[in-house]
Amino acid sequence: MTKRILVTGATGAQGGALIPLLLEKGFRVRALTRDPAKASAQALARQGVEVVAGDLDDEASLHRACSDCDGVFSVQNFWEKGVGHAREVEQGCKLARAAKQAGVSHFVQTSVANCDAAAGVLHFESKHKIEQYIDSLGLPRTFLREVFFMENFTQPVMTSGAKKSMSPFWVLPTIIGLLDPGTRFHMISVVDIAWFAADVFEHPEQFIGQELDVAGDVLTAAEMKAVYRKVTGRRLPPVSRWLMRLMLRLVNPESARQFQWNNQQGWNFDIAPLQRRHAGLRNFEGFLRHHYGTRA
Image (tube, rainbow, N blue to C red; front, side):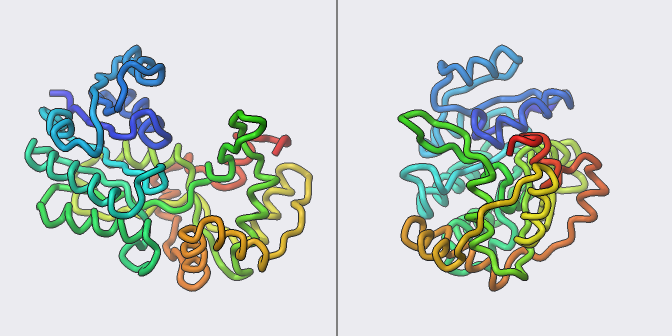
């Protein structure tokens, strides 16, 4: 019998990238969304996805959504307005309880690499608490532990009242200014997170009980600048590391704590096994060429 997978965050970046891959592999997909009538949800329905109403804060809706599902793709967004540490943990725990009660045979939790070793970084700590709770329930699970999203280089900004995609020409200098010269920075594209998630669901016997750290590239700030120039022929504007760090502490202290952790400890795992398993794993150069070519 064809397995049914519940995908949370179905109209977001991670869930939206995963759903077509699951469909290609022959899974039945149930998509959780707060509003099944919105255009993005209706587009999923036209692809043969079962779209159901639900909310990560509403445990009763999660019980209904998990019913008759073989697998669950669990994603919460610390950064969503009004969420943060405590609410993210609550959302993850509610979904895990619903999956346990429904008898889900494979629960894939999106998490963060080294989330168990980053005291004081709240969006790491929340993921670790969710992991601990999942294990306390005895759920058959895989923790898909992610790193910095390459898509963050294209975060939308408000320009004249409309959202526009940022060029790496403006975002990259900010990131570079936050990294010490010797810091090796792990990155991954959401497209590849989806690939690994689909692979995990396809091969549960290999991944249940495992923690899978995923990244597509590991670069220093200088290497990132060199890749950008190679792709575009342009030099990035100079930045003041002192100023960048001060600004981030004032505007987003949680992100500032993460980059401090990256410099002091940071992610430290080998991506060669990932490259062998996923031949199309996108590195930073590939990401820039795919999204911008010479227009970055």
